[in-house]
Every structure is written in C-alpha cells, then in structure tokens.
Length: 175
Ligand code: GTP
Ligand code: MG
Image (cartoon, rainbow, N blue to C red; front, side):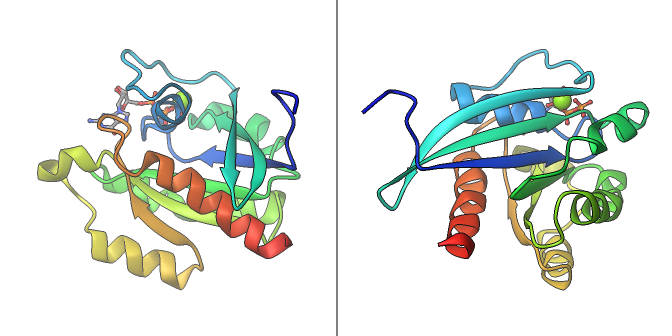
C-alpha cells in the first residue's frame, strides 16, 4: 500500500477565541509534544494526519483557524465542506466560553448544519485557575447537541481522544 493511501478524507475545523490553545492542540496531535512559544495564527494553518479506525485509514485534514476578530470573515470563508468542528475554549477564561455560541452558529450555518461538533475545554492542567465548571460546560454541550471533553495541549491529556472522537462520530454517520 502506498504510504499516503487512505479510505476517507475528512476536513475538520479548529475554531474558538484567540489564545484558547487551538494551535497547541493541533501541534500536540501531530508532533506529540507541547508547542512552546506559540504565536497567534495569521489567517489559517493546516495539518494532516492519517489515523486508523475500524480497519479504515482516515486522512484528517485539520484547518487551524485564527481566533482573532480581524480574521473572522477570512476564516469563515473556508468552513465549507467540513465534516466536523472542534470548538475550543479556555477553562480559565470565561469570556472564551461565552464566545462558543457564535463559533457554533458560524460552523453550523457556513459549514454544514449536520456537522459533528465537539466542545473542547482546553488547559485542563490549570484546574486551580478554572472559571468554567465541567458540569456547566457539559450541560451547555448537551443542550446544543455537541459532544464535550476537557483536554490539555500542555500534558497531552485527551488530545488524541478529541480528534478520534470526532472522526469516529463522523464515520458512524456516513457508513
Ligand atoms: P490564535 O491562533 O490567536 O487563535 O490562538 P490559539 O487558540 O491558536 O492559541 P495558542 O495555541 O497559540 O495558545 C495560546 C497560549 O496558550 C500560548 O501561550 C500557549 O502556551 C498556551 N496554551 C495552549 N494550550 C495550553 C494548555 O493546554 N495548557 C496551558 N497551561 N497553556 C496552554
Ligand atoms: Mg493559533
């Protein structure tokens, strides 16, 4: 088999307010380590990784968008065709949790109303500085038909899981 052969190609979006750790999550998923000195993403960056789920090779094409307001209309224009979205907030910054609403409506209206959405509370390593409880976020996710987990791009906790959960859920819908 060719090194790059795969059965499915899935486009996933990483969205959420600036500073929530989207680029660090992606970096950990691709490189298996914490990205030190991460800088604000300009526009958009990409990453791909092939994963194996139920005897299938799935190429995940992950679009890491800029959370800064000035890039909002640019990044929105790339949402079309996404099969899934990971909406990230920072558990230590309530404002970024309040921002989830508008990211959610953006991805549902511009990508696909049926897309799989996972709410990700990042920086779970900083639980002492928490401003959003696990319970509140999981209730919010349930009300808005998203899956939910907390992760840490610093320790790597639940980073694999968030992408695999998303991919598995998409596959279960299309197979
Ligand atoms: P934009 O590209 O501007 O949208 O931001 P972003 O969401 O990509 O944030 P980025 O990944 O660049 O991380 C922002 C800051 O949070 C950096 O200083 C990271 O070191 C820090 N950070 C990211 N993830 C974690 C984490 O899981 N734990 C801790 N403690 N810090 C983190
Ligand atoms: Mg970034």
